[in-house]
Length: 401
Image (cartoon, rainbow, N blue to C red; front, top):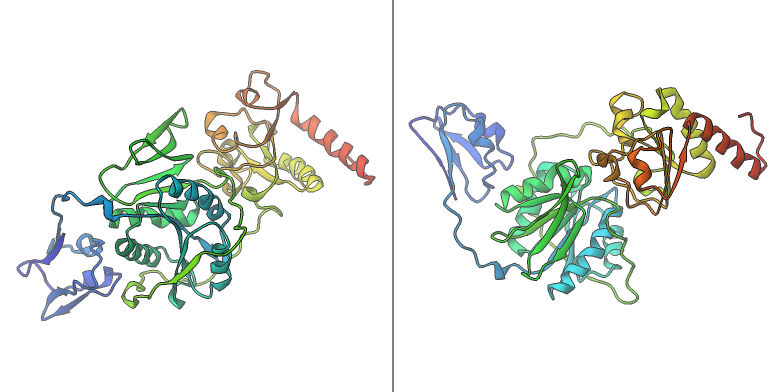
């Protein structure tokens, strides 16, 4: 792959300079010049040039020696030095994949002042923890993270690379795959090594109506993002710890076209939806947004989080952060209570792995009953207040319901 500037078309307008995220371009004598050592071939300059003066030539991909790629990697997503819960789930499945391939498992973590997070990761059954630490990486920036992780992956060549299908993972891992000219399977619910030695990546398709298994036989790494709560959390090591490898930062990778002005904490429920042991979700059957208060009252009594179906979110009854389902969050609580939710397949994708499912719905033929462990055919607006009242009575709490 190569990049070039057509001197007969370039006017020295500097649009490409402004678009370049690595400061690889400067204008000299009204002609753009590109420093190849700093260029990541991202193509931002090509799309910004109004005169079609810059072009990237991509040769047909030559047959690559895939045997050079070794190991399974997990992206160690963290925020404020705290490792995201999905990482420990990925370590669990990553360990299985690595053992099946007879190779090592590593976690790569980016950030600044992350020593505690690194030590935490090293206490899990991984062979190595790659640490890329720099002040410029203290706050998540998709452009920087994409550029850094692309560079590290090109250099160390893992065979398999897993990341959480979180807001962070979804926002930049696809960019890493594009830069590496490989594939990425999003929102996987199943991962295993097949008899052919390839990573078999399974995900819902066509609205969750079928499960598609996707292979990446010709390029590396084989990349997947995985939803939270799909795999069990890994246990810690019984002895020793992983090798910690500190990588050398490259300053030319840290430029960005974004600037963080401020952080605004969102005000949500008392319990994080994806981490909750009990979730009470409401749907269209609640009738109006005010009736979500009935769910919140019961949630307060039993320490539950409040979720919702897509229909309730689309109606503006509750913020999107509470949505459970294929286009929302995937959850796996000990108890999931579906209140006034019909149970379309898109909703089931996000909660059917719950340990115990309780459904309350007026319609005895609602699809939710097909996967429920316990079902109540009735009006949720009558049943929930009675349940809340009963729980308060058992606790000796004065009740006005």
